[in-house]
Length: 111
Length: 110
Figure 1 (cartoon, each protein chain N blue to C red):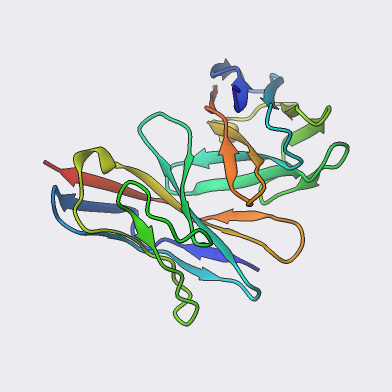
Figure 2 (cartoon, each protein chain N blue to C red):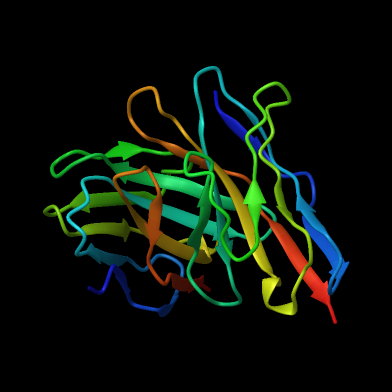
């Protein structure tokens, strides 16, 4: 049972480049989330998916897109990276008691 | 709109001293509240939730609806408690959207 996995762990991009962050969970959870973590700002919700085939915007969705490929996988795409998107990104899935299970995070730097 | 407030960005205590990490919330319905912990360079993990009323690693938290608070307490701090602590609120009235506080860094001084 791997729980929630994320790839890559680290990434450096140049402004304007694109990339996709991958997330998968093996706990058969319906809901999945993407957050960004910034110093002094805590965790902010980017997008979430209540179930396969549905996605919704969170607090800070601008500059991001998501895909809920199937029940296991929820990817986050940066189409044109900007320095303001330098952050640590966490994927999470939600358990039966509304608790969140987090992945290990992706540390992204945009130059 | 739901909101979670953690008023202290940093809390420093000596080993063996009591710890209280404050969390206040704003929510119109019946909230579900959680504490998550993040040790250095690790993923966030659930510490405890108010529904289960359990004690994990010596930590407890009581939901006070009158004061809209969910403070995290431990009678005697240990060095291994040094970490970031996040209070979170889940919307129980439909879709379970979660709101996190900005976090409090607990530093236990040996």
